[in-house]
Image (cartoon, rainbow, N blue to C red; front, top):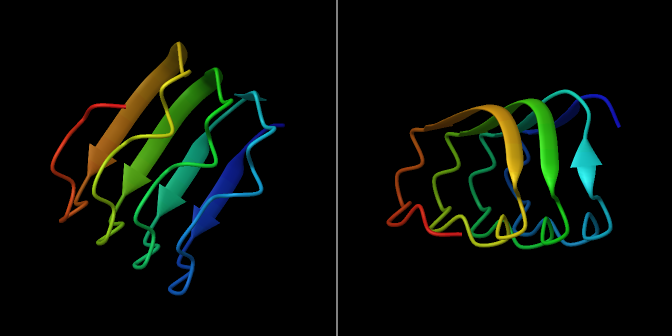
Length: 88
């Protein structure tokens, strides 16, 4: 998969359904999903070739779900107001 953009889905609470995705060739954008509380559903994701953006997800409390991630070109984690831990 090249780029994946999950943006501005105000009712989205879960990333379940992406649980078989193992890599993103380019960038993964997870932005402005105001009800998203977890990144679980990305549990099998091992690599993001370019940039992982996790920005402005106001209900996101942790990065759990990224436990298997072992390669990211660059990462940007910004303005996730409820994020209390980078563990995951």
